[in-house]
Length: 193
Length: 243
Image (tube, rainbow over all chains, first blue to last red; front, side):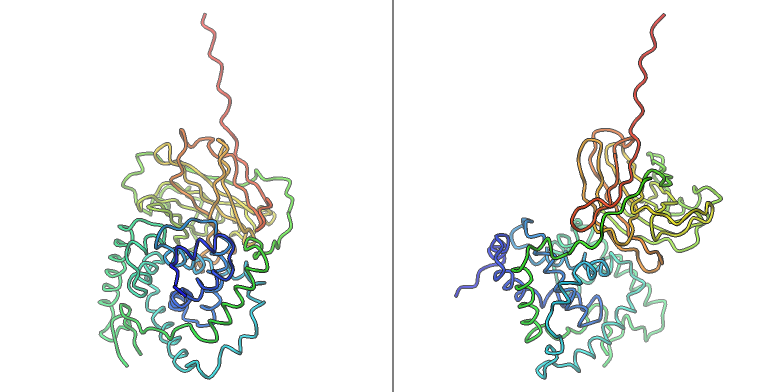
């Protein structure tokens, strides 16, 4: 069967097609999960936040998303969910409670060890970024970590493209200054195994 | 350990059984009920007799505000109001931003445009807000409080505080428009059990004075939980009869 594009899939979702929604989830959940994981450093929490992002997208399915903007739009929802995590978790607590026993997720195919290592590393990275204001952190995460274009990041965050550029510039400058103020082993700049 | 902030390690992909289980769960959820009802209404309507007791100190800014800095909030606050915690940005909208801090007068809000102070206000008696140490009173019963104004005359901003269990909020303009508000959580460093709302750059026909009729706090189903009403403009005086 020919794979249909996101825009067509979104039109089906808008018509209430739950299976199309499932397809959209399968297509973009890994990306959204990565965004959430890199902002929380917690694999399971990122899974819940990914589910919430899509439940929220379904709730707002009457929104007309522009051409080729389904993913950036989902990223925008994820950013809002991350910003208001406590509220989002509370809002969807009942839906999350209906997820089947989560222990089945940890099957032997999963590289649990790698996941744990990644959690530790991400948390250390997030600690090193505490000096960054949230807006700059968001811009850095979307453009540098997730590889979104400036235009898509701007769309996701609901700001002008120039604003994303300036937040990135400030983030880089702040991190450089922060790193310069520390010793050579600063975790912000160091790459070590 | 790779701690390169500009090139972090790519985490393992969210895939396999976990992804399939989540997909199945989501499809079941959305097929079973309308998405809007996924968030169950959890709070019953609470009645409050008095809604107009909210303390409001809104300083409408003018062009003379250009060039002032963040410390404007400290230097222009009445001397008896002391800041007792960090000032933290809680929301933004374009070049506008909302900051909040705790003070001896309760929670304070400060609005900035292009990183310049525009207005500030303190003492919003909302459930969960910082206590008012200057005028100790009964614990606040209100679920919404806030302020509004404009900087250039026909661009309105509105900012405020809502209790944590408020799901939605809206600005009711006197011209009949209802503007839904995004509610944002208080950053942890504020140590406040309230949330915030902020909207800026709303086009209005003339000056901000009297432009807002009310702020409404709603539950997830849209039921109004509380309402902070603002007085309208006083009626115009009839012209004096000429002698």
